[in-house]
Image 1 (tube, rainbow, N blue to C red):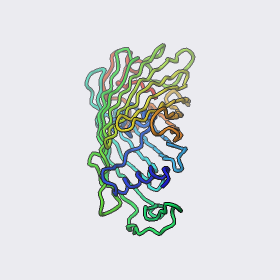
Image 2 (cartoon, one colour; image 1 turned 90 degrees about the vertical axis):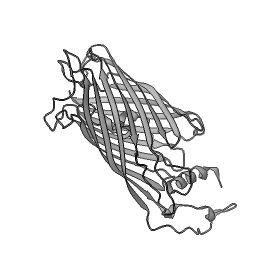
Image 3 (cartoon, one colour; image 1 turned 45 degrees about the horizontal axis):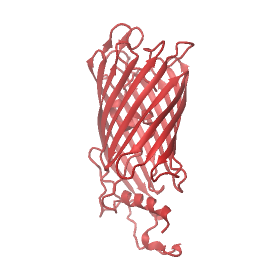
Image 4 (cartoon, rainbow, N blue to C red; image 1 turned 180 degrees about the vertical axis):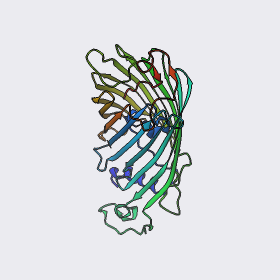
Length: 368
């Protein structure tokens, strides 16, 4: 059997629940900062207004069947909502298993805001949704179909079951601690999330079992604004009132005995984003990559923005060199002052000119 078939077959076996001790895993986005509620529902409504996010990832494009993933979410932060947090929706789809298996997920998310001090707020979040998996039995190739000399020439004895779809409920929870300094030029957050809490059984075969592994996520972001206008959360930049923004961040994930770490820095100046992130697995065969990020932010109005970002994963070590890395494209549409329930109210208040200019509810300046 040629080596290029080994990896897809191992993935397929784990998805079907045939191979004991192997598990499926979630898609990991390099632009995790563009998909916050995917990793932790507590980020739902973390900043006031409406944000809609679209992301596409093409992973390992040099392989015969690359992994492709699509993501959409929208969340509304409204401080007149009960709990002064936010509500959101999330939809994602990917095609692992050499494209023979498709994953689809849809969920509702809720965030509850708990003021702690004038400069610190916490949020708790919950995700409730479904996970759907489908398999194309007709395109699968089994061992008894293969000839060592001629390849796929035999008829398989495998009789596929009637079901080619599996739908299960899926839940996640998380918490975020959000902070800002009195001057309003340094802010950040620390979050911890747990997804697939009840480890749903996603096996297609009644004789097998394949529990989807629980995922633990820890992440942090530190935003430093340098120069005039440092305390403004407005995305509009005019003339010299355009501060340089630094975003240092990191995310740690643990799922199915696989641990990974991503850490790096993004910069924003004159509405242009640039950044670099180091990614590495921390168990088994270590695979490392550098994700290079570039983007642009266009402001339609003072509080309405469109952000475009592109990133490329450059594989620098490990067995995945030569797979073509990964491409990611994200679009983010923001309406900072959109409110359904009247806006204002809620949250901790900052004295004087901290936070938003002229004071008001505590809203940490958003980098993205």
